Length: 320
Image (tube, rainbow, N blue to C red; front, side, top):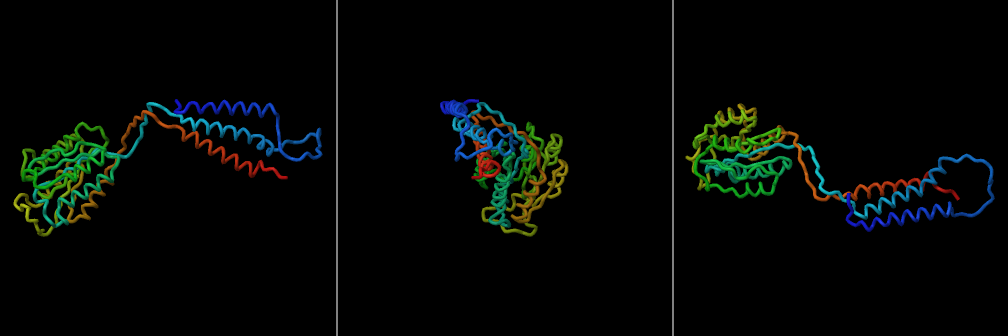
């Protein structure tokens, strides 16, 4: 342990010299001299011992204050904590049919908003983002940087990707991001409003790979059950309706679950339900170059000052 202001420790020497001087001077008590029964044996009560201990309590408190003012520090501190967290990849459908306006203002905007809330509500998880339409790609690798991940989601725009819905490729890409993870729980949350019609990887084949690697998959189908209006830019021929049977099989094969969201609030509830089902203990290691230790000394000094004040006004109180 080192000190930021080591010269302050000279105060301990001054305190020690003052204590020696007080001892050399002998006990000194203020008051008026009155006749006493000097020489008569008496029993020393516990109150007397408490009163005699007060200077020691006061001296130790002053010493702790001096040490705290010197700012004790510890260098190269390694702290290992256990927190609740998992490794999770969000796979978000960005095909043109996500412009459908049954979710205000449309499916994609609603899904993006709920995904941002989900990300910000899980501070201990490492999360990544995979985006897919006619092909899949990684928008953000696994990270604990919530600001970075939020920016990555907000930067997404429809119409910049190849048309189609490559669900199998999306899951395979997500699984690949988690393949080398050592987290106790690894999860993919895949959201889509269509069926697999692009890519060379079958969704159930990708789900089998996830199962072998111990990765759980939750699938979410979005879209109202009745016919929904399309925005002018949408291409209603680009995707068919949600392939619930395939999405259900993908989830069940990996020990996950399929959900259907017919509105924004249902989608938010689904994300919250998934968050409640997926918990896992992870160890986080924090490396600190300099750790301040003055708080412990200051806290101990404050405690002794309170004890001194309490005793001075109760057990050690002097009655005129």
